[in-house]
Image (cartoon, rainbow, N blue to C red):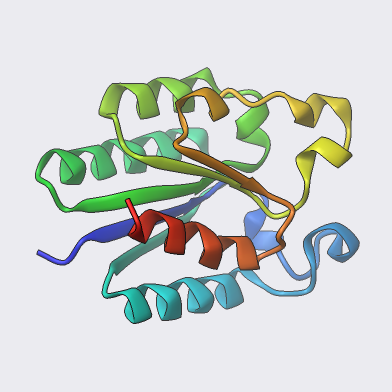
Amino acid sequence: MTPTVYVLNGPNLNLLGTREPQVYGSQTLADVERLCAATCERLGLSLVFRQSNHEGALVDWIHEAGRLHAEGGLAGVVLNAAAYTHTSVALLDAVKGTGVPLVELHISNVHARESFRHHSYLSGVARAVMCGFGVRGYQLAIEGVAQW
């Protein structure tokens, strides 16, 4: 079984390329997916890449990744929960409940932004936290997961 990386993206990330390009850059979510696919292919990993504006969908996908983790087929989860990072106890509970190895990812440096973005419900259950590398952070996160 080829180990799988789940790359999950939360609300408004479908707007990459047009939403605040001075903060998030000009690359689209499709560009990010191509970057992740190329990185996984180079590392011999399978990729599941998804985006939703709905918290429950993200929870369901973490549960799905958790089942794969229990079967020994999950390399890890890269989660850019976007605004849900700062608000979602449901995502925290999903990660805790499934035990998935998680990288919390942010395109921008959230600590250099508004104070409400400084708190994360996910950091305490993540194996790693990455922010401020732009969309290249996805590649770096997958490379990190490959070393676990």
